[in-house]
Length: 364
Length: 129
Image (cartoon, rainbow over all chains, first blue to last red; front, side):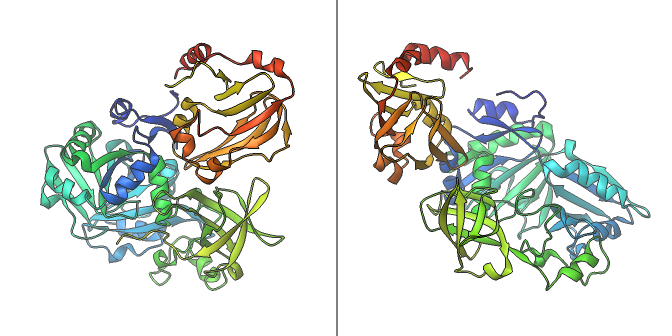
């Protein structure tokens, strides 16, 4: 299953050696699961710790005296609130308010922002941000300069501390620590995409195999390498949006339930005018669904209320932690209340579903 | 890889056990391992008929939806309800408890087109597995 058109991360050989099944994803050849299998990997992240190669993610530096102004212009959250060493979840919007990409904006210094973006959008994001430069600011695509390892789960910080020392642990969620280590210069962010505590570690590509191996060695029986399969079921249980599914250029952040990252009072930014008009007049909403009959709702399956087609599933799976079928999808506002009963069309047959509060899973 | 000698195999990774008139059909050990944890199984009703290579059921893992193709033509005389209730049986015991359907063969000559355990093993190797 070798795809020569795909890029490989510096951990490719480690994945093959660990028995990973590789699949093409966003132009990269990535592990979808290892020998243990998706469900075991998923549960290990919930109970102990998992290590993910997410080196396909893109990184962009925005530097110079005009850095803050540019970041404020192209993202919807308020980056002026960030002190150096802190980050925030945010989004790049079109003038119509659609989501070009979701991202994390870190402030490394007063005039230095560091953006972590989705692999499939990295080039587009970079071009988009660069095209809005005004004044004294540099935008650099750093995607080739970093590998990214996500260490996630209740035991993640313990393992991290044993490998890199307590100083490597950012004190709070979304904080970023820069440290020098035996694995070179590292950026450690207290972030993740699993609904668990943990970190994401940006490192030089050449250092990634050694750091990966050490984290697994020190973690011992409390850690497993985990693939994109588990990453997807974990983020879905945590009801985290995936670009291309819950959010896209034809979906605005308000209907996606991301109003909390839209700071309409921060001043002008791309998409602000459209969102001011939309706010309070949303017509549809992203909801969590649980199937009430045996079956699995998948992306693009149609949602019905009786005979009326009302929307579509954006992501869905049988959840490994909760043992039931869950999904997210868009429905008109009048069907968005918790407890509303709907039907999902699965291969021409309608199955019962109910709107439930999200996240489906919350760590205790 | 477990490949019982007394079964016939298809290129779509189903197995067939037949007395020449009826046949029991399931998915191979290779197929269940490839799919990973199976979470949902949809099987036809008794009396339903299908042609060779037609879809007769669906097996879903956490990650994917997979059609199951009929390795031979037939009419369903029994479906394995416990597998629908407890899909993980397919992972644990694909050749015995995890059988999917029993059919009355409409064209027993089709059995000749299936592979022996040795041939299927060679087929898997050829496919690069």
